[in-house]
Length: 445
Image (cartoon, rainbow, N blue to C red; front, top):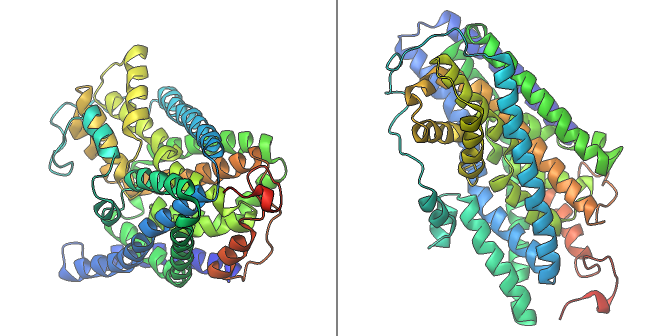
């Protein structure tokens, strides 16, 4: 099913672009029929994204609680958490810095000579300035059910951290809840297996809608910006995969092969969330134990959005260039540090980066209406940065697993169901602790 699903997704992409182009050419843009086609395409992708969002919150909660609970001791949790956060901070700095370097090198906004007020604020919507204290307060949930209803990854992560450590502390009394968390993760992955069968249809709808609405010509209109941004993403991929190869050596090539399906889904739907359940499954098969991926991957979805952070710095400076606003190196470094903070915890959903860019522009008194400049092609840019987010988190999770000495041999069972995969991992839990010892002595009382 694995290879066939990849093929079907690629077919869906090709058919989607073709269908969107035909609608764009043959259906009058101001007609009711055109709106009907757009709504039809949108419905196909929206159903898929809604079903994925249905799975994400319980999946994160279950995998995090089970992953933390099976780490057994707080020192192991602290060690892995420290390594993960260190990697994420360094990757964030590299991503944002590379965005600043590339946009200053290419100067895509130079020569546009826009003036403030040249673009309508109507498309941008209401803008609120960033409030650092509000952001910090928002990290800590007051209602876990509300956090799950909103798919707030960061708040779910905080609750799961407390729950996992608490279950470890109460020992045997917490084992039923720990088994419940594992069962919840298994159930969500089984549902994911069903939902993924709709992925080719969703990919078709997403791309058909974009091409029908904006046409292929928009890529020509913004060719320079799109090309330069994707060249910058390629450089970032080379850096991420190169650093990953230092730790994983030859297995970095097989990692790319294993994550091709989540990559295609992320690229087509422009949603990191849509790719997350499949990424869990593929990392299982690559050899990453669930007790590591269950902790590191959700953490990465809050703190390690490499593509989104690079895009935020690239787009912010592009808008300043378009309005002929000179920014000193000091100002650009301040923007970099602001993006480092403001990009953490943003929802892994389409267009989330625009919120960060808009707020950053407002904070530095740059023309907020400049967001309208990139609004039309943001879908195309979003596809690339979302795929980059998936690559960054896959590399980070695999490297940290290797760093811990826990990376297993790949599983050559592409036909295995998600439930069977998790069940096999569940059988291993308890046989090993984080130092790799066997038997009763390895278990934590």
